[in-house]
Length: 432
Ligand code: GDP
Ligand code: IMO
Ligand code: MG
Image (tube, rainbow, N blue to C red; front, top):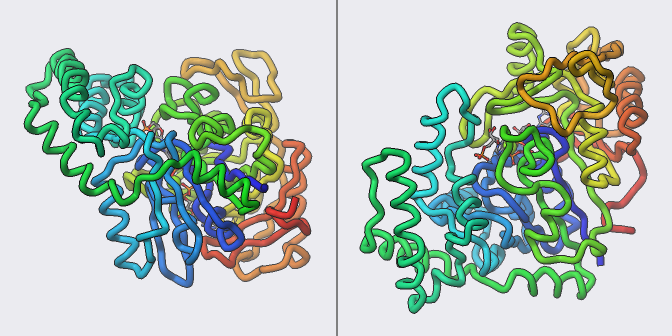
């Protein structure tokens, strides 16, 4: 009965895909609980790169089953493309991938409206991925969404059209767009998506709870990061779902007491894509240097990621929200050449000191990070496989993070490859 959650503790792209893949050899079922194809999770195994957007990263390990939970918004065309890509790389997907019947369908009009909204926001844009995520979740919460269990039942299509068409056309009109959704086009989309999705549809809630009852090992994969959480992130510069631990329960239908371990993934520095506050962001010159060292370009949109120092005050907040039991620090190797490394321990916000990321921070607040400086290790970590072989300066950095965040670092990552992962404590993630 062990449910382990892996989630991102920063603004996304922490290396969740790598960690999920690393843990998947010990898992029976890997389940995504929120987000959509705004996510880009990269896994590197023996030189072969796999980029997952909707399919759980557990798919790379043969034998695991993968579930896309009810909390995910699923673009069927994007999922089809991804399945084909994975099959093209020799990954068996049929019979291993399942989609919860009450997950919501992300329609082409959601994508279109997302893009129209963003261009209408001008300087106030959020910097979304343009994948329609916020619009699909708005429709879900506003009760104008489309669940797959409705799409696969043709008898419900007239009822869906009656609800959805006026709602979408009102939005197009309000955005002063020429677009119109016609009933014929709408039903043609439903027919296309019904045909494609039917073999994957299951009662996801029973699938995951039966697995828990059967004592299987269940791994829950978060997308984005807690700083992008709709409730806890840097609102409005956030995504439209809950990557935080609560999202696991609502996005999969499992009771909270089944969650035994929450593994929080954080980079050894910080990155963010899109707009919004970022207290420890580097200046342009240093930012370019670290972006180059860490290949910091979005796995979904290719956009350059903003880079900055590790922020312990931010992690203190995201550990508080998630109850992370373990930390995994990724991309330590990216800092290999630096002479000095800074850690943010708190901030002065409009002159007042804070030791934890303020929930109500806005883009307009004057935030001055408070730093301490540690010496760099200035040697390559990429071939190290045992914690005992890590340089003293690296261990000092990791231990300082543990002290400041008050959570154990259970593993560190020193390269993108699956085997470039080092356990820093003798633990077995599923052995509770
Ligand atoms: P995710 O969205 O959290 O799954 O993270 P992404 O896949 O978007 O971004 C992380 C990037 O860093 C990917 O390109 C990974 O292959 C890469 N990566 C993960 N861990 C390490 C590491 O320890 N060192 C280096 N150099 N790259 C890493
Ligand atoms: P993974 O799972 C990094 C960001 C977007 C934008 C904001 C809202 O790979 O960590 P959205 O399209 O969700 O409405 O955009 O959220 N964003 C991500 N940033 N990693 C992600 O996913 C992200 N998914 C969304 O850049 O700032
Ligand atoms: Mg990513």
